[in-house]
Image 1 (cartoon, one colour):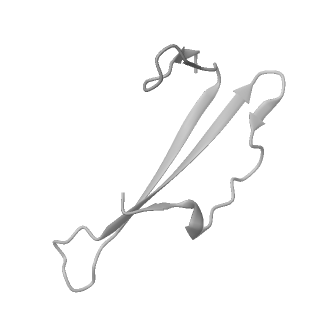
Image 2 (tube, rainbow, N blue to C red):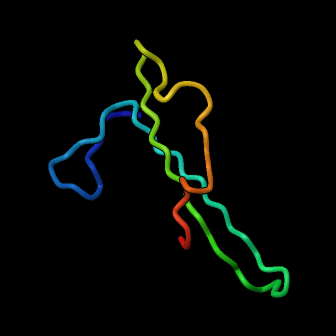
Length: 71
């Protein structure tokens, strides 16, 4: 990605090669097929440089504590 203005902080810029991965999980309820249940969100920023590659490298580990519950 290209360098771009920060959407929430005036005058700040997000560096070229910066990407955000959003992983959203939704859990339904067994006793209510119409209910949406509880959602949770995990956001991981990944920086890419042609010289050094991807950061973080490898597989990004996840645990239940990494998720924002109730989103």
